Image 1 (cartoon, helix red, strand yellow):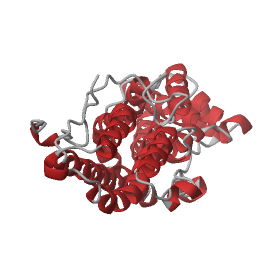
Image 2: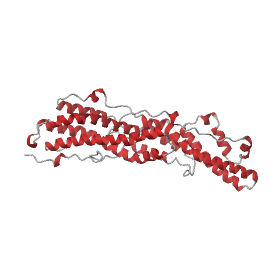
Image 3: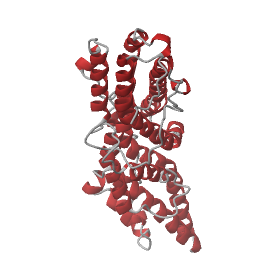
Image 4: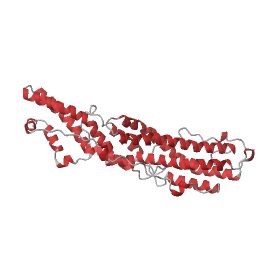
Amino acid sequence: MKKPARNGVVRCGAVTIAALSLVGCFGSTTVKHSLEDYAERVSRVLDMPLPALFEKGIVKPLPKLTDSATLKHNIEGISINLREFYALQDCELGTVVAERNTSLGKSQLPSQRLVHESKLLTVLRDCEAALKETQNNATSKLANTIASWREQKTLDYGKTWGNLIQGSQELRLALNTPERLLSIENNKDALSSINALFYLNTLNSAETLENPIDSTELEEQLQIIRSARLPATLWQTQQTLTDALSELTPVLTAKLAAVSCPNGRASDQAEILRNVFYLFFIEQIQPVGSLVNQYHYKLMPLWDAWIDDPSLHNDLKEYIESQAKEGFEQYSQAMQAHVNLWQQFLGRCNLSPVAPS
């Protein structure tokens, strides 16, 4: 008689069996194909129809992000009269303000507007300090005017950063438009994308900004974010796993309970089911679940910071919270329920979750 296989337990912490290295997020064979193959094989062995969701298609688009015009902060520029402009010829302020008022300056992308504002703050500080060193009434009055501009632009800087996060094409694609689902092979750019997203977070405080933002570095980081689209890819994968497993688990509950394992002895059908579970769920689907968990926990401090940031619109915060918190909780519950179902079946039939070699 077979010995029980340690209760047939498939260990699943936050739904993770085996730790995978964080190597990225995109590959040619995605979890969509694995889920479809898994459902088809299990349905065939149990002689049941394919669940309706798999007939219609298991991948749904993410909820639409609020349009950028609604999310955008309107920010007033600095107006300098002609007398002030000529009085500022010894510092760079007049030139920087003039750049903003050109046709190119007025149509700057959100990233270049942030670069401009960071440069403006630096120039305001330098110009104010230079004027204060000159002791006369005219320069003292102008220094006070510049100080008031600097205070206003310091307050406005967070809104400019918010416009980058909410309105730039790179971030909107990264947050809402995945190109494909996560896979366990041919992955790239996930870690660099996570680092790039956290880099953007270092730019959101005027008080900690000692030097103007490096425009080249900012554009490079945005291209990494655009290329990887990691948050949207993560969230759509999470959503697909939730929907597919939530559809499969109730159907399989009754079907697996009806599989014969007399006196704890596995029937041929039970062993075939174990092999399907191992080859498709353990080997292909659950490793993607491991990636979902790892990317989720790495990004969660960033999402918490953005949800708390007053510069970001409530619509964006609600969207992030629905995906990163509520969506992840639903995914975790769906995955755990599915694993629990198989634990019970394998334990009843004294089968190990690992297929024999």
